[in-house]
Image (tube, rainbow, N blue to C red; front, side, top):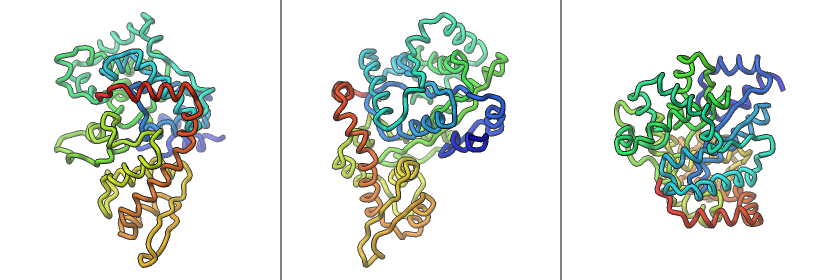
Length: 361
């Protein structure tokens, strides 16, 4: 595989690369660059997580040495699953099961438990050195990476440590590339700034899109608000299960949730049904079949997102027809995941355990 093919694999479906020139230089000079994505084990897995799982698959295919950080202590700091470390560890195991179920080859992936990082004094040296190279105000601004506001650190000072831990994660693991959703942008930029001051390696950042909640954006973006913070606010969240589609949902549940979803006619911006097609179905190789009454032109076969977008904006596809088609295709796309969970005893037990847990965020 040549450099151009590797670059295209690593960047396809990404919304931002910081920076493209650095990534090209990295691929030219490093035969097997090291990359990672970290995830908070926080409960059940919704379809938005499939976006980064697809990218992990692309990274591996491009010859990247892939690491997946099970951010257990990060989840504890962020009050996930009530701070119950037993549940947090169960959630980490379930994510790995979902990756397998989704067809991600986990054998070449190096899974890293944050437990191992925090047990090493060298890791904490990096956290402290990172703190010495950044202002408190800058760290507070980065709290949006964990779905928090700056003021929330006033009552729980551990929140301040979180962004610094993410910086230390990247430096400690000696990573070349940091993969994450756009909600992680501030953490990656913080690492790049701190690393530069410490004369250490700056990680190239590859950012993937976030799926908006099925209820749509509950409020408009206010003046002066940064786009990554806004998208983080309106993204799909497991804490609001009625506005999220989980990978284990039945076809009937998927159909009901999509039927109720926000889907304004002719609008594609922040339209969750359009996004499901764009970020989940088309990257998976689906041709979307739109069933329409004959009086409206009959059925359509849509083979690309550009084609779907054009037709929807022009009004050639009705929202209800789109919803039915996307729900049907998504249920088919998730069929192997449901089947895997059904036949894998540990996956079933983990799902049951997490389904009974209270998810607050």
